[in-house]
Figure 1 (cartoon, rainbow, N blue to C red):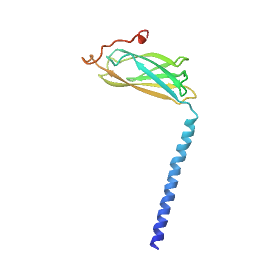
Figure 2 (figure 1 turned 45 degrees about the vertical axis):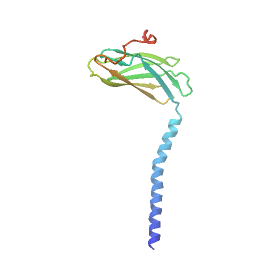
Figure 3 (figure 1 turned 90 degrees about the vertical axis):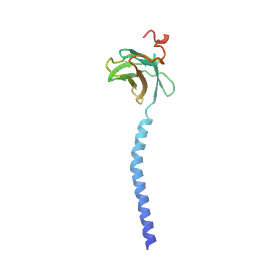
Figure 4 (figure 1 turned 120 degrees about the vertical axis):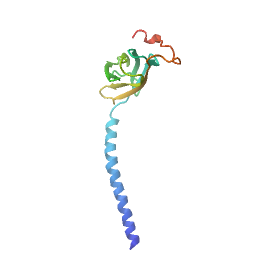
Length: 152
């Protein structure tokens, strides 16, 4: 009698585990099918320098492409130190923009977030660390602007 009761308890636990699993997996599978209908984008970007001082301008250059490396014309939002700047990539997927560094924020490492939005694609975000120093460190490289950024 005791053996039968233990076996019934285990059967109940297995059935409960299967029901709980079904409630968790079914919504996840539905969500996955929605995402599968959208294309993915890639953002590649670089800044003109490795560090900045308060009041400087960050020059950003990059491209937005699809999964197949084809150019994507997208709306871009640059978020930095509480500011939002909107720009658009060109038909060839390239973009160039400028983002000001606050004069009042303290020295620190901040994040520049680039978000790409376009219909038919899943939103893509890229995070770039930005170092803000009041005065350049003696170990920091000289703040030269590369030629590819000189026209921005």
